[in-house]
Image (cartoon, one colour):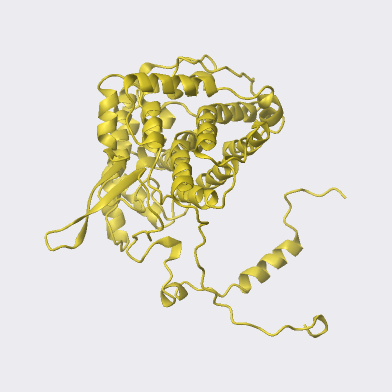
Length: 453
C-alpha cells in the first residue's frame, strides 16, 4: 500500500487526543510543589545547576539599599569583557573569531605566535573525509541545514578511528576538527539543498588556508567567491559575539547534560545542535527579518504612528504570524541592554552605508526605540525590555545576502566553540551524571485486567 510517509492518520489524531486529555499537569501545580519551571524562578532568575569559568553574564547589580536592580548588560569570556575583546582585535585590523576560540578553550589570550600556530591547525583541519560531501551531504539533501549539520556530525563518528575516547586530549582534537569543519558542513549542505530542492546550479568551492573562518564562509558560499573587507569583518564579529553565552543557555546546558553521561563528542555536539535548532533558541533572527519584511509591506515605515500601531497589532496577535511577539526584543537574562546587540548595532550601521540600506537601518532603530515602551504599556513585565542579539544580527545577515536557511547554522558555526569548551570543562570537573529530580503528581492505581477495561 502506498501511503505518505508524513501522513497523520485519523487513528494518530485519536491517540493524540487521548494523550492530551490524560495530561493533568496544570500551570498552578508548579508553584504548589515549589518547582522552578524551565529552571527559572518567578522573577526570571535561573536556578544554579553548576559552576563554570568559561563565560559570565551580568544583567543585575546591587542598589543603594542592597536590593537587586537591572543594569546595563555585560558579557565576559574567561573574565574578559566582550567589548574589550572586540575593541582589542578591531583596532589592529585583526579577525577575532579564531582568537576567541583559543580564549574559550584554553582560558588565556594567545600571543601572536600562539595565535598563528593555532590558526594553522584549524586550517589544516578545515577539510572533510574523502567523498564525504558526495556520500553524506549531496546524496540525502535536506531542506533544513541544521538537520544536515546534525546528521553530518553523527556520520563523522564513523570516520574517527578513536571516537569514544573521552580523554581531554582526544576530545580537544575532535573539537578542533569539528570547529574547523562546521563552515563546510553548513555551506555545502546549503548548496546541496539549493541544487536538489531549488534546481539551481551546484558549485562546491574549497576553503583557502590563508583565510579566516568568516572569509572562508563567504568564499565558499558565493558563486564568485568575492566579498568586501567590511563584509568579512562584520561576519567575523557576529561569530565572536555568538561563540558563547553562559553555561545556562539551552544548548550549552544540553552539552553539559549529555557529556555527563560519558558519551562521545559527536553525540554531544549533535544533541547541542538539536537544541539550537529550536525557534526559542537559535531561530529567532530569521523571525526578526521576516517580521520587518511584513512590516514594510503593511505600513508606511516612515510614519512613526503607523510603526507604533503595527507593533501594537503584533502584541495583540493581529499581525505577522499572530504569535503576540515583537521578535528581537527582550531576553531571558538581560533587561536594560544586551551588550552583543550594542556592538552589532554599530557594525550594522556601517554595513548599511556600504550596502545602501540606510532606510532599513533607520526602521530597525525606530522599532528598537519604540518597542520597549509599547511592550511595557501592554504587558506586566518583571524587568526591562531591550533589543537582543537577534535584532541586529538578522539585519546584518540580510545585508550580507546570506540565505535564511543559513542563519541558524551560522549561529552553530560560532557556538561550537563554546560547546567544546563546556564539554571539556564537564569532563575535567564533574564525573557525575546530571540527573535532576521530577516530582510525580500521578497517584498509584490498581492494575485492571484487560477483560475489565
